[in-house]
Amino acid sequence: MEKSVIPEEKVEELFCYEANSKDMYTRWVGVTKSGKYYNVETHEYNIGSAYSHYSTYYPIEPDKVSYFKKIAEDRKSIEESKCLEEEYIRQVDREHLLTNGSDKDFYKKKSSDIIWWAKEQADEHMFSFDKVTVYDLMRDYPEKLTPQQKEIFDNENPRWKKYFEKKNSGNDISDEIRYVDDITPEEYMQLRRDVGWVEFPLEQAKACVDNAYYIVCVRAGEKAIGVVRLLWDGGYIAFLSDLIVDSRYQGQGIGRKLVESCIIRLKKDMKPGYKVKLTLNSAKGKEPFYEKFGFKVRPNDDAGPGMDQWLISEE
Image (cartoon, rainbow, N blue to C red; front, side, top):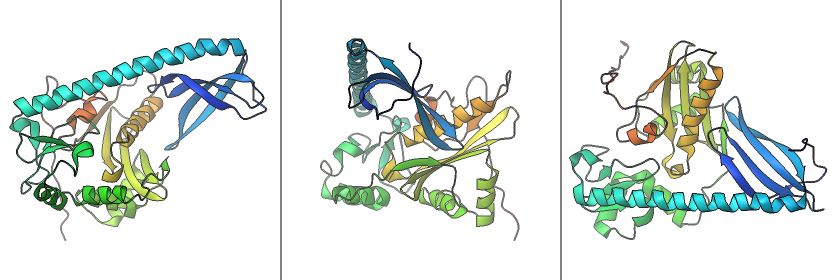
């Protein structure tokens, strides 16, 4: 590859021929208005908790563009096949729920709820009123629900109701998503409150924010819509805590980026020869999401069930 240069003109992307999510880089071919072609490598990295990137430009001759375009077309074909395979697996899973679903495949958010939620893969939302007919939230709501079912769903899931009302009204909820390292104790507590987690004094919330080893806040515009905290004292145990994403923004891969950010940061800061056990407490029904990152459900062959308790100070 030729020596990298700094282009004198803006380089517009023609096509991407390689994307590596693990090492966070892409390779693409671009061209300027005057017809100069470049092979570009773009790398993502972290500044504090904010994602940023840099690009390296390598001049290429026009006759080499067709070579990279062929690679890009092959990559697109493979990705399309992979998407078809994943969709087939999802359909098989849905059929399994419809034909072989049992109590262990469902859970309720509250014991008093009527709706059962399926223990689905990450970023999917499947539910049922009778554990026989299973609905896909993003595909079936509200068209495939009866008026009575919709009323039940809206009463038990007011945040989803607001999400779809805003979506159907044409209001834009796709503000610029930013990953930053600033979050106030008030915003942190509001996010916890939104998902029904235990509340505590703002002084204690401030300690949670200030004393985290690493914290990422997700903002849509200026509004905090997600957070994750990584706790580590430099020893062999680290704890992933408080992964929260506003329900209106779920299904966009935000939770995945938050977890990946913590893992990348921890690996970066580990000294040669270090071994660190990263642990967490999964919300009920979300275990499959964390398993994708290598976490193991307890109990297993190596460890018993996790245990905890809440301590409350005396007044």
